[in-house]
Image (cartoon, rainbow, N blue to C red):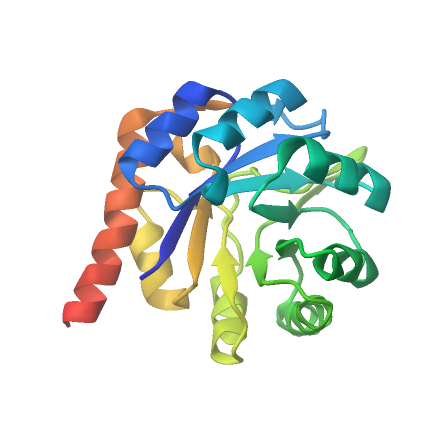
Amino acid sequence: MVQVKICGTTSVHDARLALEAGADFVGVIVAHPPSPRNTSIATARLIRDEAPEKSVLLTVNQDEFALIELARTLEPAIFQFHGDESPALVAVLTQRGFRVWKAIHGDAAQLHELARKYTDAGAEAVLVDARESKPDAVIYGGTGKVADWNGARALVDAGYQVVLAGGLTPENVERAIQQVHPFAVDCVSGVEATKGIKDPDRVQNLINNAKGETTSALLG
C-alpha cells in the first residue's frame, strides 16, 4: 500500500490534523530559513513527539556535525536530505544507524545515476521532486511544480524505492500513483490553505485519494 507523507508541517495542530487523516509520515523543516515552512527546533520537537515513529526531519545542506546535533535533539525516525548533500554524507549518517531519504532532481539519466549513488551509500529511498532555480537562489522543494513522473517510474522499474513529490494535489495524486507506482507520495503546497498552514479538507482528500487508489489497484 502506498504511504503518504505530509511535509512542511509548522505546528502541532497541523501535525495532529495530518495524523488523524491517516498520514504515514509527518515532515518538518528545520535550519533552512529560506523556506516559509521552516520551524524552530522547539516546535520541531513538539511535532516529532506527536508520532515519533512517523517523524521525518527535512534539512538542506547541513554538515555532519549539525546533523548529529539535530539527531540528538530531535530524534527523528528519518532524515530527509533535500539539498546537494553528497553520497559520502549519506554514508556517514546511515553507518551511524540513521535512516535517510535523499531528494534527487534531473533528467532520466541523471536520476538513475543519482539513485544508484545514494542507494549504494545507504539511502533507504530516493525522493523525486521538482527543483526551481532563480538568479539569486535555488528553491529545493515546495514549489508546487510537478516532478518528472516518467523518470520516477523508470526508477521504480529499476528496483529503487521511490518517494514521489512535486506538485501533488488531491486532484492528481491518484493519477500519479497509477503512473509511477511509488513507495510513498509526499505533499506540501498541494494541501495548504496558505504557505505553512494546512487545509484540513485538502489533507483528508489527498490521503483518501492516495489510499483509495491503492485499494482499487489491489482489488482490481
